[in-house]
Image 1 (cartoon, rainbow, N blue to C red):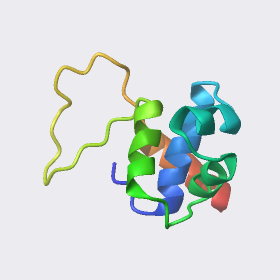
Image 2 (tube, rainbow, N blue to C red):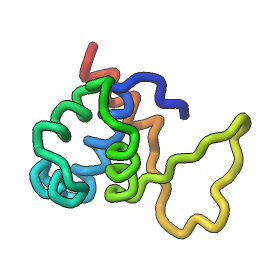
Image 3 (cartoon, rainbow, N blue to C red):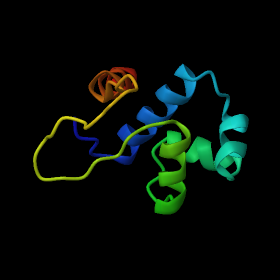
Length: 95
C-alpha cells in the first residue's frame, strides 16, 4: 500500500501509536518532540521535518521501505502493520 498524503501518513502513525497504547504525550517524549508536533503530524500537517518523522517511525516500530517494485520483507520477525486497513479506516472517518 502506498501512503500518498500527509493525512494518510498521520493516520498510520496514530493507529500504530494507539495499538501500542501510547498517549500522545508519552509518544512525544519518546521521540523528543512536543505533543503539539504529534497532533499536527497525526492530522496531516505537511511540513514535518523528515528526521523527526523517521524517529517517529522507529519509535513505533514501523518499517519504511523505498523501491520501485514490491518485495517481501527480508527476515521479518515482527507482525506486519496493515497499512491498507489503516488508510481505509482513516478515509472512512473523513467521509
